[in-house]
Structure formats: C-alpha cells, structure tokens
Length: 276
Ligand code: SF4
Ligand code: SF4
Image (cartoon, rainbow, N blue to C red; front, side, top):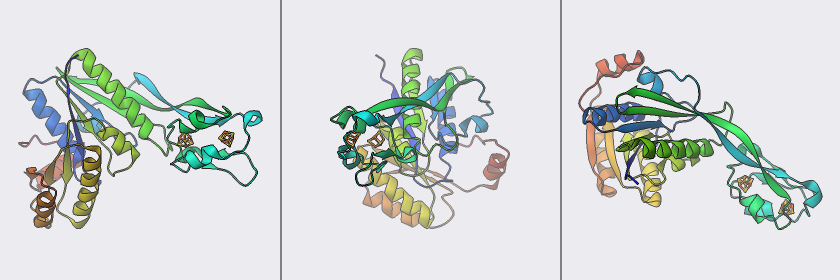
C-alpha cells in the first residue's frame, strides 16, 4: 500500500485564509509534479471549489449517520444510556422513557452498544454528500457537504475523509490536503485525526492569537505536529504570534503580507499565485 502524505490546513479562527493557503499549497505541489488531492472538510460551507473555478454537479456518494432509535417494549427505563452519553444527547424525565436529542447526537453508537436490554437500535439517515472534481492533470478536489441544518457535522467529515483516503490509494496519490473548518470542535477534530502534520493559518490579531493557542492545544492532544503560517503578517501585533511560536516551540514557516491585490482578486473569487 502506497504511503500517502496527509497534511491538514487549519487555524482555529475563521477568516484567516485557510482555504487560500490550502489551494496555493495544492497548486505548488501540483507544479512539482506531485499527484494530489485537495479535500474540503469544511462541510458546512465548503468554498474551495468556488475559488478554483469548479462546479459541484452530481454527488459521487451520500454520507449517512446512524442515530439511535428506541424500541419501547424492550426498554426498562434504567437510565444507563443517559449516563453514558458524553454528548448529553439523551434526556430522561424520572420514570419516563429516554428521549434522544438528535441535534446533539454525534452518532457514536455507544448507547445502542451499552444498553443491557438491546432497546436501542441504530437508524441510518442521509446527512451529506460527497463530490469529486478533476481540476487538472494529477489534481483532484473532493468536497464534503452537510445537509442543511445538520448540527453535528463531524460524521460527514469522517465519511468524506474516508472516501478521500480510499480514492487516494486507488489513484496512488502522493499527498492529500485536508482543508478544515474553523474552530476546535468535532468536525475539526475529525479532519485532524491521523494527519502527518498541520499548517495552522493565523493572523496577528488578539483573536487570531487566542484561537491559535486553542488549536495548538488541540493538536498537541492529538499528537499532530504543527507549523504556523502567518497571514496578513504586516498588520497587527506580529510579536504576539512570535511569542506563541516560541512558547510552543514551533516554527513560523511562512509569512504572507497583506496586499490589496490579493484581497481584490479574492473578492472576485480568484486567487493570485504569489509565492508560497
Ligand atoms: S439503557 Fe436501554 S433499557 Fe436502559 S433506559 Fe436506556 S434504552 Fe432503556
Ligand atoms: S449515538 Fe452516541 S451521541 Fe448519540 S445519543 Fe447515543 S451515545 Fe449519545
């Protein structure tokens, strides 16, 4: 089995330019004759396809999540499932049957495995779609999209990643880039699991610095090595980011200066190919 390099592009704060960096990195690797897949894991609002001038046509695959369903005649109202759900997605009033709160449920499966009376069964529901675009020779884009209104999108990211990794094996890709959502919640954790390293895209603002620490802590817990990419490096307080890099003993790999030309191009849905 071919060893594929798995790189995540993340950053904690929204609007720091993660997608821009992911696409520029994809372009760079493609120019170096690497066979690459860019996987957009920002499933609530994927936009890589727009930035590289693609359209999402027919999905290649649906994603499904299993949610718990109660078989009332089997339930003894013991409350074990309620206590074991770490997402607090099961509510039980005294003496009543448990109620599942779907928007909090991650579909982890613990409740139907732990119920001693087999009173919970999994019920599959469509939660998203996966699209694939061939961008150019040796360059594919895989996009995951979550069903509108879905609160817990981690499972859609998990399925999108699984599909992308299988496809990467099939085409013998060299590198797969995972462009994550902003934040440090379940969909981001799913995107970061098992990657070889992550670029953390940030900006020299107080919020950028704060969110950078959050994502650094998460990556440390997941044992994912990191490098910082500092966007709009010539605005704000660069020394705050430099201090964080020093404290966490990591490198600022790249600084991207603020440029009106870059912003204007971006507002038209284009990317300038500056050196990365
Ligand atoms: S663990 Fe099973 S039997 Fe107990 S309350 Fe939950 S569903 Fe009912
Ligand atoms: S599947 Fe997991 S998250 Fe959902 S209700 Fe059961 S234990 Fe809680």
